[in-house]
Image (cartoon, helix red, strand yellow):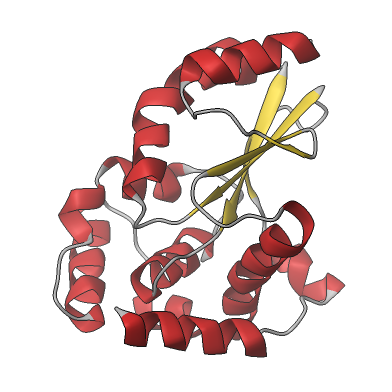
Length: 195
């Protein structure tokens, strides 16, 4: 694990800032009305069980009451905590139209693909899972695409610099860090004050 974190740290140091033309090719994963009054950013790591819990137990109510009604939008940003999460983030962004289908599937089925003693085993489980779910793309091409890699790493860098993100999930509401315990009740109270 230490070795994987070291590799991720080296990648972070060497990440190139995304150029405007590259950023246009890679779309953010966003759900909700782009012009919503409330903007939520979720910094997440795809191997984080607390992030999966957010997608399973908080996001459905948040979507029903605030996102589907046009009051809020949520944008998912990458904050990979290990190489497996880094690869999964690249997959979630690869050939992405800005939708959240792959991202949600990865969180809702996290135990099916994050098992393995080596990164190679985890990658193999990830490939098998994605195929079983009907997602089709070139795994190796997606995980080695430099633009996608930089896009994911720049999310993490920006999270640390701009919002002092140091754990996942971290929720930002209208550019302010949500500091309470992350459950729907607390989130709803905060959002209702902003309506």
